[in-house]
Image (cartoon, rainbow over all chains, first blue to last red; front, side, top):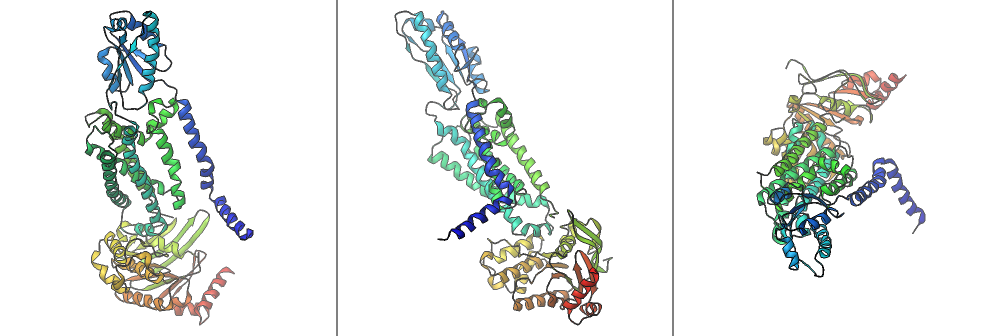
Length: 366
Length: 238
C-alpha cells in the first residue's frame, strides 16, 4: 500500500471533476433543490380539506354541530344542499361532505347519532381529518343533551375506492405509468447518446435519412419495447399485487403507451444536451425527481403550496398521473372531460417533444 | 452530368468559432480517380470531407458534388462515407450492420457482395463488439460501400491497421476506381500517397499543392514525397 499511489488516484478523480462544471454544479445544487422542494411541499401544504355540510335536521341540534364544524381548523367547510354533494365530490371541489339527516335531533335524544359522511375516497388519508373534526364537534352536542352519553356512529360512504381501498391502490395507479416512463426515458437517452459517441449518428447524417425518420424510427423501436414492459407491469399490478382497478384495462394501456412515447422523445431531446453517459444520467435528478415530487404522485397537487401548484400544472406527468388514477380508481372512460384533458395534454406534450427532438437533431453536427 | 468533376470545391472557407479550419481551399476531383488528401493532423482534411458529404456548410465558397451544390440531401444516396473511427453498432452482427446501412440507402441487394469484398462473409454472424480492430475497419468499409456509391469518402481508412490489411484495402480501392467510383482518401501517411492518382497537400487549412505524386515531387524538388511535402510546407511558411 503506497500513499502516493492512492493519492494519485484521488487527485486524478478530483481533477476530472474540476473540468466538468456541470457535474460539480449538480453535486452541490441538486440536493439543495430536492430537499428544499420536499421541505416546502411538506411544511407549506397547510390547506385543510374542503368539506361540505348539508344540514337537513328538522330539530335544532344539526345546526349546532354544523356551527362547531365551521370553526374547526382541521377542515374548511361550506354549506351545500344534499343533492349537490356527489356532483361536488366528482368535480373535485370537495373531498367530503357531511349530511345531518332530518331526524338528527331525535337520534341525539335517543342516545345514538348517525350523520352521513360521504367521502371522495380516491386519496387515502384524507378521510381521517374529516372524521376527527366531526367527532370533536360532537362534544358540543353533549352539552345540549345533558346527562346522557351519545354514541357516535357515522355512516361512511365512499364515492370511489371504498373501505378496502389502501395506499397501494392509490400509489399503484400512478406507479404503473411512472415505472414505464422512467425506465424508457433512461434507456432512450443512453442509447441515443451512444449513437452520437460511437460515431454512427454522423454516418446517419451523411446518408439520405431525414431527421424526422431517425426520430420516428427510434420512437417506434422503443415504444415496442415500452409496450411489452407496460403490459408486463400492468398484469403484475393487477393480477399479483391486486391493485384495485375500476377502469378499462385497454384504456390504462393506452395511457401507458402515451407516457412511453413521451419518455422516448424526452430522452432523444435531452440526449442532445449530454456529452457523456455520465451527464445523461444526471438528468434523472434534474428532470425526473422534481416531476415525481410535484406531479401529485405522493402529495396531491391540491394540497401543495399555491406557488408549486402552478409548477405542477405545467408538468406533463401531473396529467398522466391524474389520468391513470381517474381510470383505475374512479373508473373513468373517454367520455369524462377530465380524462380527455389529461390524455390531450400528454399527447400534446409528445408532439411538442417530437418536434423539439427533430429540430435539435441538426443535420450539421459541427 | 454537366460537371466533368465529381467533386468541385471552390474557394471554400470554414471556421469553428475563432479557429479557421479552411481558408480559401480550391480542389477538383475527377470522376473515377483516387484523390489523396494529405496533411498533418488538424490540417483540415476531415473538414473538407465533411463539407463534401454535407455534414458542414461552408462559410464562403461553394462545394459541388456530382453536379449538385452541397448540402443536398438528394446527392447523399450516391455518397459513401467511412468515418475516421469505425462507426458501427457494437451490439449487432457484421451482417446486421451492413444490412442496416444498405437499408437506409435503399440498396439491400448489395449486402453479400460488400461482405465478400471485405472478406467478412464467413464472419457475417459475429457480433461487432467481439471483432478485432482490423475486422471492424473492414466492416466499416463494407457499410460505406454497400450501396455502390458513385463517390466514396474515406477518412483515414488505414489508420491503425496492419500492413497486410492496408495492401488489401488499396486493392479494393483500385478495383472500385476501375469500375468508375470516385474515391477521396485522407491520410497523413506519405507512403500511401504514392498509391493515389492525384494528391492535394493541405496544411493550416490551405491547399499547398495539387497534382500527381510525380508533380508533387518535382514541385517540392525531391524524389522523396515526404521531403517534397516538407519543402512545400516550409516554402509556404516563409
